[in-house]
Image (cartoon, rainbow, N blue to C red):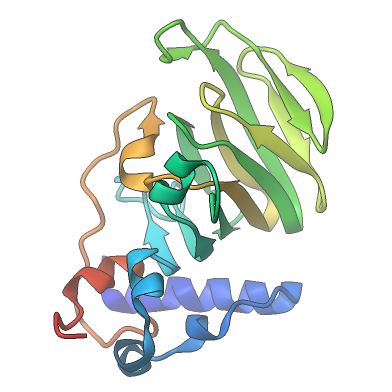
Length: 228
């Protein structure tokens, strides 16, 4: 994907966030030069900031997501059972844009419809080995109220509503009827190793640098000056 396309996608997300009134932390607006000069190890190592993915589909408009990680604790604290054992992200989904079917090995999360259209979440259960079982339903909590969902059933969340998803709860989700801002409040996890997809994703996003970045993506952090 060209950097110019990434900048356009990010611009659309920023416009939507502004319309919603949701406030991002100051480092969200740093230029690349400011990020290099000001970013702390906690921001870089915690992979806080912007990310864009097409889940290896090569078709971002139909299968993709913009993410902003606001905060994240550490796996060491999680293993110790105390401290910053939580994380928070803001997900920006355009109308009908799919996040494909997946589950997590360790992470428990709440998906919260923060603003916009309907958030539709399709669910099914897992087998004894944790693999997907399309014939098995699942019980989840929606704002503290238990809700049984038939295999492959869809729950629809209006702004302000949420669902709690635990390891083994296979789920895919999309915005319906317009774009949607989605909050993800979760336990700490390594996103590179903790997510299991029903269909393994294709190659990761490769960026063609046809213009300077508007803001850095977390994947750009791997190329920051080593003496920082």
